[in-house]
Length: 139
Image (cartoon, rainbow, N blue to C red; front, side, top):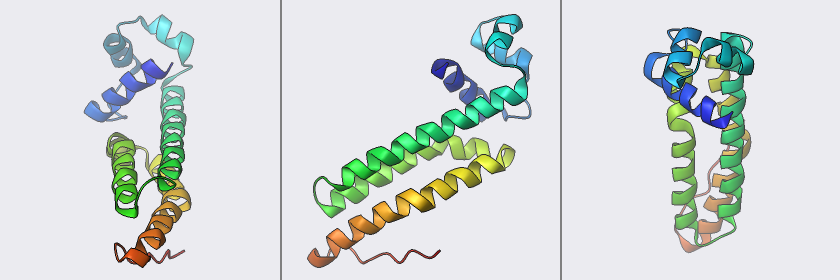
């Protein structure tokens, strides 16, 4: 299923969610529509599974980011966590901005609840050495 969703997200990125039809998906995936409908009830189901997959992928990225913070120095931590954030969100954000604003807001909420505290921890670790300034998290 993950491979299907990955290919579907590429199509959504290339053509937009609204433009991609079930016929397009079947053709690009190299399967029949009948086979596609064995995995998805309809296009809404495809989009919902894409959303669920995107959120799960983003959450796993956040977990990796938490593990990084306990590692080396504050600057290295900041760079690694920033790169994780960029890699996790590039494709998803491009798709969400115009077509799935609810997913964009959900991912944004995840970032506020998980990434900002991680950056805050990194910031406070680097402050005594003069590497960073503490980040104020506004709620």
